Amino acid sequence: MRVVTLTINGHEVSAREDETILEVAKSHEIKIPTLCQLDGLSSWGGCRLCLVEVQGSNKLQPACVSRIAEGMVIETETDKLNMYRQTIVEMLFTEGNHICSVCVSNGNCELQDVSQELKIDHISLPYRYPARSLDASHELFTFDPNRCILCTRCVRVCDEVEGAHTWDVSGRGIESSLITDLHEPWGEASSCTSCGKCVEVCPTGALFENGKGAGEMTKQTEFLVHRLELRSKHDE
Image 1 (cartoon, rainbow, N blue to C red):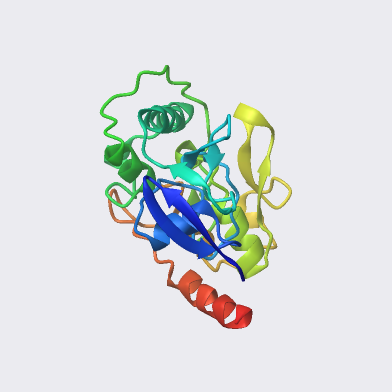
Image 2: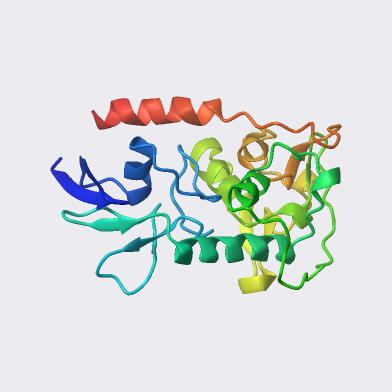
């Protein structure tokens, strides 16, 4: 694989031409925020938090799905990018019903972490307060759509790792929502294997184990690390 040279935040770096901007940034300890991307799953480019500026392009590029090229000049930290990222996170909060103090993932939430990193201490946009019903029909887990940010991690891990294809996205735009099987309650979804992988990859408190109280839900994604190791050996 050909090696190319590019510049990130004023520093010249080298990487394989098949890598994405996000992968190169990570390998050089350059942090780019993201919520939908998770190592071990396919990249989707949906949350748009990882947008970066590429010299010569008139639009911002999602780092998780943009391949590098020889001579690229990239900026990952600018006032413009920070403004966009803050707005995106604010929209995620206003589009749902996120009440951190009573959430099972309080203190273990990636949305919470990103908002702190971006120094968001208040929301300037109007809240939508959507009417979303809890799905507690599963004997082991619960789905709270009020805390869902539609990152589709659960959809991808269910398809790509477990192979059950239980989760999907229904609707369009602001009316989009997660569903199980053909809009059946989760507990009645015949395709669900109750593996819990979707719960482990959820970045918020939207999917959690039954019986967990506020701040008690932690996530374990070691199975994805093992999958990455197997993929790396296969590529060799």
